[in-house]
Length: 195
Image 1: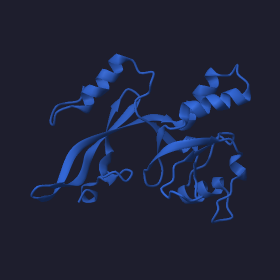
Image 2: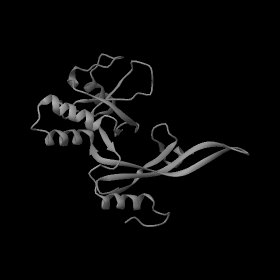
Image 3: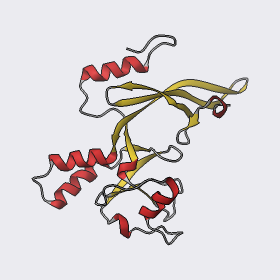
């Protein structure tokens, strides 16, 4: 039913968002949607539907990596890489190609993109993105993102390209006033105009 209304499920959490309709707040996009799940009550199973919001930044993970590198240019290579790991590991990101999906970063991999081959094919990661999504990697020296896969207890790993992923959530450097403005837009009543 949600798909028929042009809502798409993001992740596997029962949250559906209409990604065509978004609210721009500062450098953020806010998607509105619904969260649904079945609950067992005294009289049987009921479908519970609540409103939901998802905040995604307009900056790619590569933008954040470049920003961290610019701030730490006086440190040696190993220290900069450690700083990158501590800043990004555990963060949730969104792919902005194919079917939208959310992933949590497990590790930053510092390997040459051109040397990575897919396990089930003889093509490189670079060729895979070009053939499947018609996307060209512009920065050949960017690290890769190893993210949590859906198949637990297996050696299967997912590697993503930072320039093709967006950061999610409110940036930590946002001041209280900007956070308040986002909060006001998040709890907006139906029919009320955006500020």
